[in-house]
Amino acid sequence: MKISLNKPQENGFTLIELVVGIMLIAIAMVFFINMLQNSNKFVADPWHQIRATELASALMSEITAKSFDENSDRSGGLTRCSSNDAGAQSCSAANNLQPDTDESNQTEFDDIDDYNAFEKSGNEIVSLNIPLNSELEAAYAQFKVSVKVFYDSNFDGVADSTIGQFKLIIITVTDPLGNQTEFASYKGNY
Image (cartoon, rainbow, N blue to C red; front, side, top):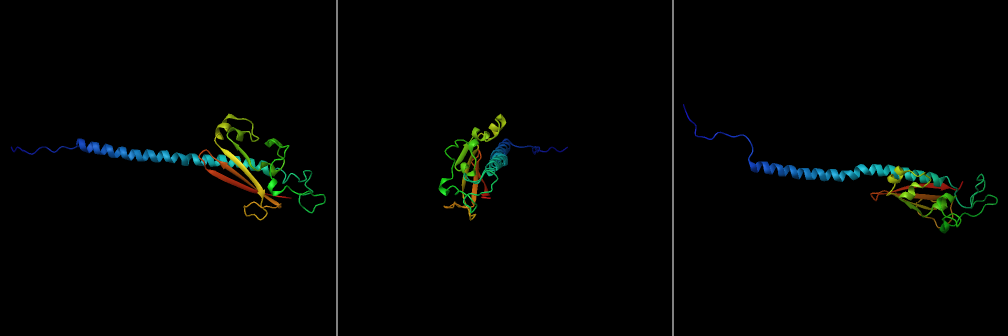
């Protein structure tokens, strides 16, 4: 019988190999967790975009349903301001597009000029013709909305200094992440 003096071969890992392996797994986990945390903003972003679109759409519908100008004919629209129509008054001056003195809040707005420089945020947004609702208040709590209205008869997106036949309405919605989304529409003096 032959006796071997060689050590039997052991299968397994040494303590140093285990510590190095655990460290590599820990480093990989840190990168993976960091990547997951950064992806949260991409998950929330579409939700905010949808809310911003809904908000702007509702407000744009409300604005475009109003008269073109304070001096527009509101009884059938047969006479347009600043036109050759018989008895036509002049439209509001380009530097005077704002709520009239007797229109102190949104429920009294009767033409699109009244929305120029209009700004709301947080819980004020929910009250934009929507009955109070705690879910809506929470959804729009950190949103901001602002509106600009100006004459833009040549459709270049730049405010004209004279009275024209078209006004550009720009609604800017700022979501809780600070992303600003603009929505625009023209209203003609028909």
